[in-house]
Image: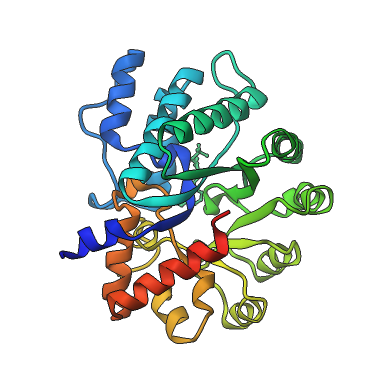
Length: 323
Ligand code: 6MZ
């Protein structure tokens, strides 16, 4: 069996997928046509010359959000994203998205639309379970962050089988997250069963060391990327067995890591970081154009391990995180 078919047949768990980054460009174009939005004939994607992580964030603000402007569009995106993960052999999927006001809809309406689109998508795709994390963007002011935390708690009470936590995301070049600490601490106090997942040391500068320590003091349930973590902080993470969402293609294609061979996954694996705490994820499959099966193929090549080892690893991850 060829590598990709083998990887597609694995029952996979995806824990780090931004909804608006997971819509494929052909589906986005279909949606743009439906909504009468003009998209340029050529949209530069990572991999084109000189493309940087900042360009990824510009792609969201200038292109994707110009199409996903109302409830119908958001619903379309969720449905197509879930269907694509299902086709890729994902059995357990945690999607994340940043609540925003869209046409005719406030942030509460955004969350309610995502939740109902997920319920609908699951009823039509019985082999996949889908959960939702509400994202706070690091550029949000404290009031917006607090509103999102309150929405997470509200919707987790209403839909406990769908809403499972809060994520902190956003362009890491846009400053730290200290102003978000009161809201994130409140989440941990008021809703201890909800997960707190945070993008961590995705780019080289910042992170300031005390920023990373502040994040760790919040007791995050998982950390995303962890590309530029100083050794002593990594030692703490390892002692605490903090799960890391590994985004190979996002880091390499997005330009923060030079090559798959140089990716920190290999170092973490070889250093004995608990395998069930290393989770392969796609981040933004619509942008980085590498689905989770392909991430498994890349990881196997880079780690130089057998298919059996990869299969055991996928099972460990599924046993630990799928609920
Ligand atoms: C940090 C990222 C990201 O929320 O509109 N996002 N944040 N690092 C990344 N690495 C590439 N990729 C995506 O999805 C898009 C939003 O997710 C965050 C950004 O804030 C982006 O605006 P939603 O569904």
